[in-house]
Image (tube, rainbow, N blue to C red; front, side, top):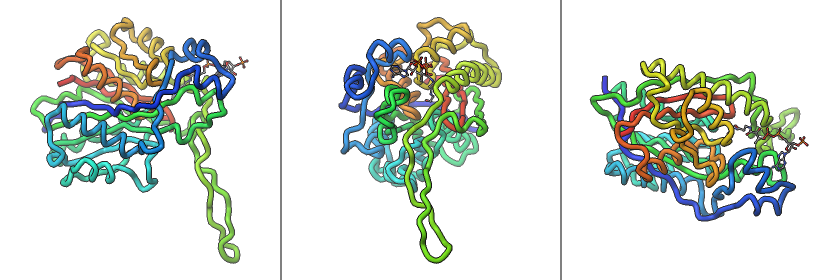
Length: 327
Ligand code: UT7
């Protein structure tokens, strides 16, 4: 069975920054509250001309460049996003923008767990021998769906995109994984369609409407994250035949610094093993893990042979962990 190797990472560079002080001009909040409760100091926001497709393409291009893989060599593009430019999907537009003429491309939606779910999905295509080269992208523009007058959510999110390149290899470097869903907790975090009946002809009415902004029960999601995430990482480690002491880097979905600290503490990992870019990016949903990974790789912190424990968690509710050997 072919194995999976991760051979490159990339992210998009967004120029517009929104600081906590900027936000406090819009809602009743403060830099002190946001920094103390979440660790966030600023987030990046997509400019009106920076579509999801543009950001995802930039991240993928940078990952391909690091991997020294040409766009024509890509067999599959998996775009994890909850905020496509088109509800029919944005991956095909990324495909054409990249020049990945041979690739099949599709979107995958699993909110903030999207990158981990897409990574594991991509790996199955490689392990079965169907595809040899895959680009996995996590990208979201949640600013489109944020209620900018709701201080309980608008201070948390930012926009971004990150990507990795996977290739078939002799040695499998996806060491273990575990994915979970619990729809009974769906109400805790939503970006739901709000139908409005519109009469068509006679008794027939159609659903018109749009998606309502993000709503979240922060305390419930917090409790869910600090309990379920250490558990799912331990299950993925078990499948990898490893223990927490084997982890070189913990790369979690960047939702809240307090969640990162609590998960690390429960796993018995020192703070220096935890990758955090919370302060600069906030919560970028499906993009947060690949951005954090890419920054750590480019800073020279994550090196070939390092064991990385990733974990995503969020709406669905969904959560999952993938243990990978970098390089
Ligand atoms: O990516 C998906 C996963 N999402 C998450 O993981 C989010 C998980 N949840 C959290 O990170 C935290 O629950 C939050 C950061 C969302 C909230 O932190 P908290 O410590 O749970 O605060 P809280 O909701 O318990 O609110 C405490 C107080 C409340 O005031 P009262 O009722 O005590 O008077 C809120 O109204 O803080 C108030 N508050 C704010 N104050 C200033 C809530 N938001 C703000 C704000 N600025 N932005």
